[in-house]
Image (cartoon, rainbow, N blue to C red; front, side):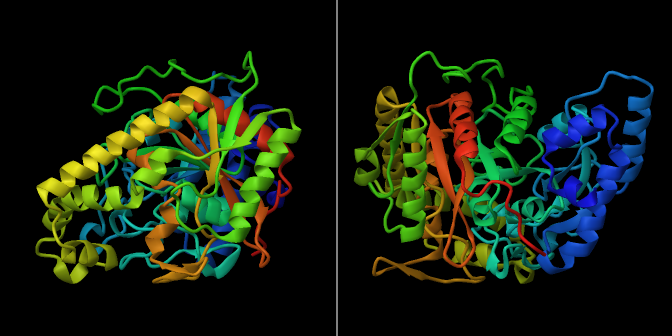
Length: 468
């Protein structure tokens, strides 16, 4: 029973609890036991939330009394340690914030709790959530449960590893350039970065640059992403970027009146991509085509005209550097790799910053043109599968690139705020997960959730878990 519980998705656990087939206490205890057995090797969980079992007992009492309960009643979830959790340590991956305990929940945490979910633990991240591997001076490095010598990605790498290893059925992550999608691909789970502003970032730190930070659910199944998204989306009256009503849907919905049009690519301005990753994207495209979806290979001129990684670098040095300098002032001995690197980077000139902003506008125009013709874009999540820890460079197609190149396939959709979903569809020759990414037009989350749900039924790697 314990094995079944730690590998069940949140939707199933909620149904088991609702129907009395299992108690919330049993579910929470199973995950606590899994954390105790597994986390010392993975280091995904950095803080256990006091009172999770008490909350589970209260949930069971409500069920017994016949109370009206939420859709995630009694189900545990984990939270990336950049989101505030009332009464639970929120240390942001840095000794500078060691021992910090917020008084209130982030909006997204509060919404999951209102749906009946129980905060189980906080998960690891890079310093200040800024990097593509989850490692820091305070809580150390997270390992990939599929291979402990590999990275689980960043910045939501602790969250992805916890879910993949069965320590949590559902998680809350954040995404600036890759941070829910890349870790999901590295560990074989699913993640959704909604349209920018769909989920308020109130109670998350850092906020710079506000225009690019997204919150998103992470899970083992697409139906869990859809459920969590339905609970998380919508304005909160505090985040000025979160203004579109939750009910607004620019997508096709679950039953489109016409065939969905999917374009796929593995190059078109993305730079070199690992051959196994590229082959997995093509297999996903072929699977959708066989299922009756209209699919064709595409190119996107806007991606070839402006390099998104270059635009990202120029914009973010200008916007993030002052905030990091202010945060670390007087704590220089407590800075980790990211802060040191950023502060040593030359400032972006105003002219280059404006050029970057104009390049991002051209990207938005290019995607608007693409999504006028197609409903979904299918492409790699990351340019390589999960790599070794601390990798400073790697070679693809004879080109040597730095670690941030792994995000050349995700950055374009962070800069433009488009919704994007990551899910597993393949396996490398050495047994590591490979993901594919689906993108839709702004506020069309229902479209990619619909196509991802279909692709999930066609996946050759469903219900595979790491053995730890």
